Length: 349
Length: 224
Image 1 (tube, rainbow over the protein chains, first blue to last red):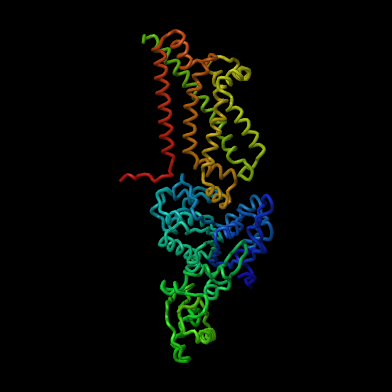
Image 2: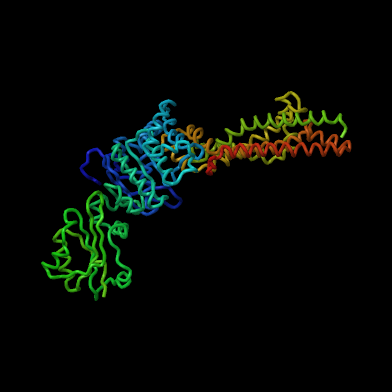
């Protein structure tokens, strides 16, 4: 992704920096951010609150302006655009929000019509387009309802229909599922994935939940203290997280967690048998490696937990084992040689 | 109460209604745009014009800090220049309007500042111009609050209209002072008070009803 070969990304952050003037020095929100968002991808940026992800997202439609560097959307420099040129770019970039930001004074139909009114479309055309959009997000029966009469999931569907109204090439999602319950989150994420598939539009989303990326993002980036610390295809990062922040985000989202009685006794150093997290990714995800560990080396691993899930339609396995202390290094070497990733979580007696 | 007082009361009621109606209308015509401007023109806001904002804000505060009865007397030359006389209901409309404009402007400003900043951001993201944001987002969303503000302003103007009797403004307040107080006719005073109470109640109820009709922020029961 960053510095990768794609010649025409949908969005390109090029050496981007943002600082706010403040008494006694500037506050740096973003530093040296370079990232290419591939056309047609669902790219997720994850970070804690205050990491700068919101600022970064708002650069794409010019709600924030860069202090240094460039932001290109479909080849157009957003940071330089002003007035009518900027408003034209904004019509090519839809946006949905954590708190929906629907007008309480307008019903569903009129909320969806708003961007079309702003774009100056004729009334008769607006009617037809709005009806089509409301159908598309599955709200056909609720066109006359007001936002106060809708559930959170329904409100976000209105938000999505509104964001798609002007036929944008890029959809920005600002924590769009953070205010929703887990079940509703799934249906909204599914809708986003469906829109991405059917309309071929690029989705750039920010979130603080790794589960969102696992479920729909094809590409991802991790942001911390205003810098991108890791980026690439989601599957690769889940399989081989390089940065400690990425690992912290991953903990608990993928794979097994240690049972409480083991976790309590976990010590950072020996004595005690090593507890190893084994990650099975790609072609090796379905190999029976534990059986081979027993037959080839005669090591019998103690299984403490495990899961197999799908990330981007590829199997992703995760196993927690402990082996005798004197066979730990041997075990890891064997597994790594066969393409698995291992990590020692600690030692347990 | 003797029967010949009825026409006098009726005439005074009409005079009060006339003064309040015209000054409310003119006050709203001036106060609405002024309030919108005050709400949107601080540094970094939609119509960023910090200096103009400060100057108009000062003018509004200055007008509002002058007690109404002083304002009435102080602007007599202005009233005479506009209406041709400083006596009568038409003359009374000038100070009433001048007091109404800054009052309504502040109420409108408050109502517009109540609108969620997220809506402004959403409209900007859609590519809306500042004027489109004001017309299609800020005013419609603030309308219930603006309506309650206008109601408050009309009620206040009913009270103020009683004071312009001091400069020959006529109306119910003037009638109450001249007949009820100076001619010792307590029944006239009582009648004036009752009519004013009814008037204020009506204005308040109608205003609240309209505001509730406009307000979609809470779910409404849908008839079965």
